[in-house]
Picture 1 (cartoon, one colour):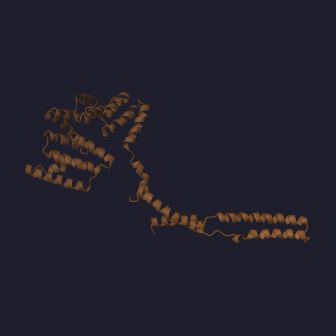
Picture 2: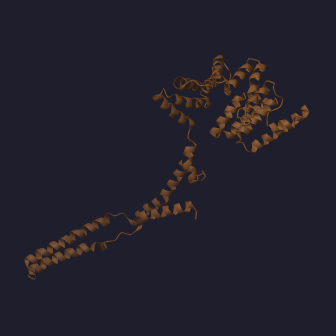
Picture 3: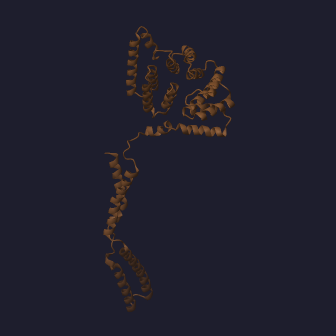
Length: 365
């Protein structure tokens, strides 16, 4: 028995319970003969008093009692005459029984969403927390900072989030406030430089370069600052200088460093590498191959990666590897196409989308 049938049955029972009295026949008062009987009794009492069968006091008492009953009977007859007819009451009951469900159903079909599928209770209870808007969270932090403008740690937490949201000018100001109120660090200087470069559409301006140089002065191993200084050299047309900055950075990078593929792709972009750094095993196996065979092998691996991502598009790192491989192979159009496909694949996952945007930005897309 379906839920809809149970609900319809319960509705029908409730309506019948309310409207059933309207369909019942009201009790009659036997054609008004009761009041006529009481009138005859009054006349009979008067005759008995006149003939001496009962005393005067007893007659008065009898008249009072009979008159009270006569008035009650007259009131009952008046109510019966004023009551609506049985046909009218049944018509009202039928209209209420049929019309109300039709009106309610019509309103639900127009204003409701009967086509939506069922949602499990567990999903409904966890969905609000999972889908909390990042903009709302940022707004709450900003409200806190308006009341506590010297909270340097708060500005330090807010700055990278604003940068990921594309609010580069706000991110730059947040980094400045963090430096002012919570101390100068290489990471904050590098973040400030990145925000300034992003605000300039990826161009490492003089102001941004100055911030990266300040970061290097505080920490010579600051990866982000060194990468962007190499990017500044590449944008100035000095590929060799860029490679001289990036190559030592890559040589010292741990094998599991998340930024290692980005630096490897940058080196390939300035001609410092001939094949994409897909993995150490792949490179080792390709050492004895000819250039044509090596390129064919790499393209086959890239095609297999692209096929896998079409089936499982949630792998952000896989998308970034694919884009990077296309760029190294010189297929910039395919790289842009893969970036667009990646955005569509993860557009419903805010965290993955932000990770993807960061990776594509680092690759120059």
